[in-house]
Image (cartoon, rainbow, N blue to C red; front, side, top):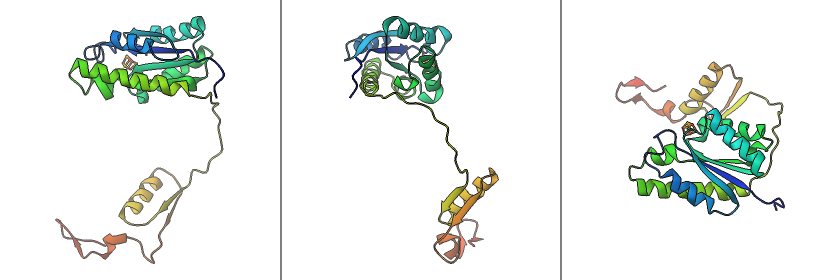
Length: 197
Ligand code: SF4
């Protein structure tokens, strides 16, 4: 159970017109402001820019925020950026949650009413989720980079060869006496009539 009072900051990114042309970002920010645990909600033109990140950092310091939600692009693009911003402001970076309202919303929905409704749902889900986040520490552990591939059919063989090309040590195991799987049982393959084996 979390004994610290949750104080969430929500940031809705315009991404220029990438999001703002299809999603009513002000309406989403207003909606976010009404959610449980949310202390402030803002919209801003480019959240990943330095001024955008500074907005988050300053709010963490000034308003004692302990959860951050950014509604913008895919986490693949900027999750690390925003986690780092949280960390630089003294907040555990895992108290951060991203909602993808660009690739999952503005880029795939033309209707502003529908896109805004979906953006609100995605933001609400992120706010609810971050509420339950726990602080985590990064650790480095020793690992064995060798790979075990189970099954030496065509897929297994191909996977093993690609891994070996990437300089991994590969253990390829097969329960049958020979490799090749179903492919090895065929006579010829369509359409080239190559010998399957
Ligand atoms: S955070 Fe993502 S959505 Fe926002 S401006 Fe940067 S790239 Fe665009």
